[in-house]
Image 1 (cartoon, rainbow, N blue to C red):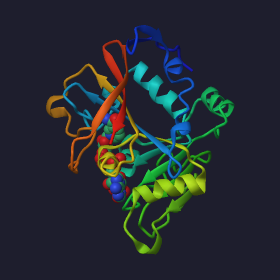
Image 2: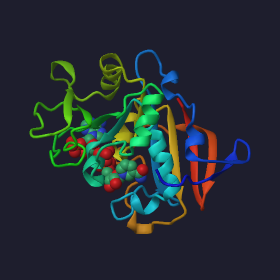
Image 3: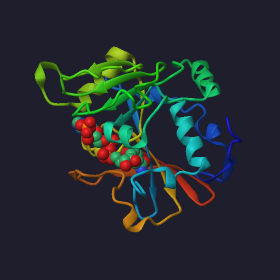
Image 4: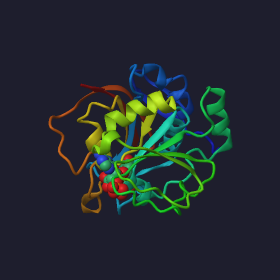
Length: 254
Ligand SMILES: NC(=O)c1ccc[n+]([C@@H]2O[C@H](COP(=O)([O-])OP(=O)(O)OC[C@H]3O[C@@H](n4cnc5c(N)ncnc54)[C@H](OP(=O)(O)O)[C@@H]3O)[C@@H](O)[C@H]2O)c1
């Protein structure tokens, strides 16, 4: 693990802390309602709201952002992501650091979180690093009938019953009932977020704001390609800062 960055806490009270200290004891699963997992969204954007620069998030992510991101992955039963993000960001094994996997085990979690990939098309190459990784367990949420061939990862499918359309609320309920998932970290992308939010399935937003203006280099925002029927209100829980990058944690108010 790299040297931990010390973040400045601006809210609720002043102080300094590492990403690990910020998230220690967060126990997200303890907040889960009875019938689905507790779901937190983690997204990064520029100050002018771009979710990508040159179709990637990497230009907006600094060392502190990566440490918070990896610490969040170390806290949850499952990491959920849309197929567009898996393809664009070439997702691989979710927790690569052996020390972080041990921390998960010490917290009573599986060494590797379950990867949950949402896809309508099932256009997912077995050569994507996540699917080519023999340590990864992947649940594909889809209404499609096809199977992914040639994956080294352990892949299973959550399909809606009776040929119905894809239903994220139903899929989350089944993740809880059939896979024992009590906490989910959703890492986007914008299109998946635009389905989860109107369905009332997002409990918290972790939002990292890079001190940059993307202008026309950024095309998407963190919730995109489908309008929300109404604005979603957020309550600020904390605000951290490191090197000009801001890290806000919000509760979603429905
Ligand atoms: N700023 C950030 O924090 C952040 C986070 C994540 C991603 N990104 C960026 O966002 C871009 C990708 O954007 P995106 O909106 O296309 O990503 P996305 O939401 O990850 O992927 C969209 C795809 O996911 C599947 N999907 C999502 N919601 C679905 C639903 N309700 N029903 C059925 N399928 C669903 C579909 O897969 P199929 O196409 O397979 O049918 C859809 O085409 C990338 O450039 C990535 O770098 C930014």
